Length: 293
Image 1 (tube, rainbow, N blue to C red):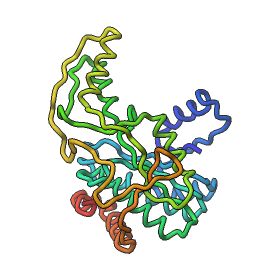
Image 2 (cartoon, rainbow, N blue to C red; image 1 turned 60 degrees about the vertical axis):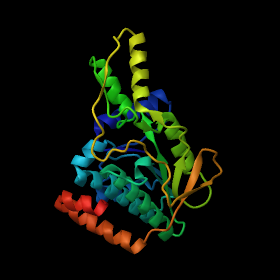
Image 3 (cartoon, rainbow, N blue to C red; image 1 turned 90 degrees about the vertical axis):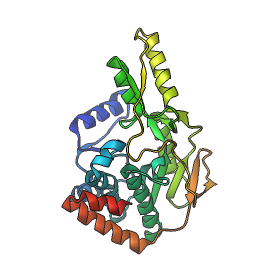
Image 4 (cartoon, rainbow, N blue to C red; image 1 turned 90 degrees about the horizontal axis):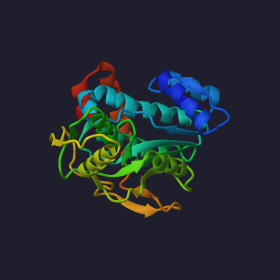
């Protein structure tokens, strides 16, 4: 089953699954999973055993400017899917989290951190009926929110290529690698919770820009200048994979680690989520910012 609110994306994904991957059957469903009623209808009719939730806002500046929609799409949509998974007997719900959830300094990171806490609470409360797995990844290279896409577009437009800071680094992972680890995360034995994918060493963003410029110049594009434009609001110079109060334990997969930390206050989290739903419905961006912080 492929669910997306964009019919253009859905058609493209279905074509890729059928023609490029040779998968014999897929069911395209045009729907907005941010709508709990729509989500419940889908789950009731099709009873999915495993759900991979990859939708959500990924652009840091846009989330900073649109906190209501960031909270609605990243947090409340995840909550709706978690509730439907429990109600209709889904065995496992997997969500892609982010290293921005560690000591979060921006709206995007705080929404991801809240989703991780939400999964920890649901995992404790559901008593094994459904496993809730949040896999913490770095920047997925060439995904919709990736800086690589920005650089490629700037190179195609004739430059300049803009980099925020000469020392800025990020953990990078390719789309196939991320997909493989998300698929394997749901098969790990034991309870769900928050997991971390082994990400290797962080990469300097300016080095990535130079490499992409170099590849383009080999194909006939003139060498382009790099401009430093300064870090954006809430943007860290270096991302982190593990918070100060967290520890990692190994799993049966050599590249997946369980994140252990003090348990969240379940009652308080549910109360705050109800508050978040209320202020999102009101379109109150200032209150959304306050609650996320």
